[in-house]
Length: 221
Image (tube, rainbow, N blue to C red; front, side):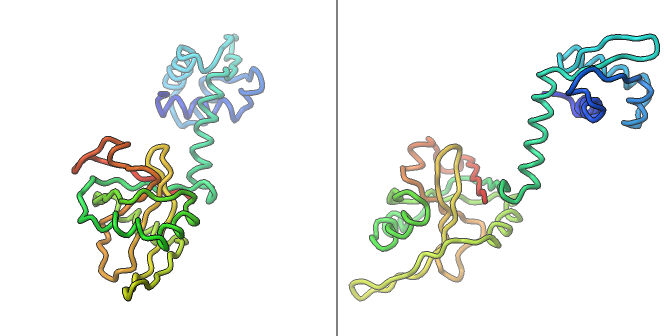
């Protein structure tokens, strides 16, 4: 992990062309770019060299600096993270909460043919008969509201054997590498801080989680 202040210095060298070959810099020029003293600039350059992110050749009035392959990898990772933040196509939302027990309704509803068929078509997998119930942490409630504003997939209600089953909605998500889906029943007073997650497998068993264990759910566009 590169310290943030050293990363800024590495960026400054790259901006001057350091990824393409040796560039001439001085502690004064680096200091002016980063609004730091020459002494601090010197320490950061030494730190980058020690870490193997740059190579330096000293001159009388400065130095020729080149960003190494390791330094480029650090910068590419930084670039990818910014792309993920600002590119709509790569935007993701992270929900955190703790596992809670349900009342068994998920198992029943996920076993109903009309629901199962629609979830399979919408999410790309046949859901395991059951849901993983997650109580969201207070810090995730703002994220939950953002997710609610996204385009969810409608699951149509149906009637069978004289009983009517209401609409629901779902949106793809992941827990780790497991492809999942968040399901929200059409009930008016469904709790805002409760998330029901379906998957092609039994999530409790696969993840090895019990009540009160922490779980992260990633929703991506």
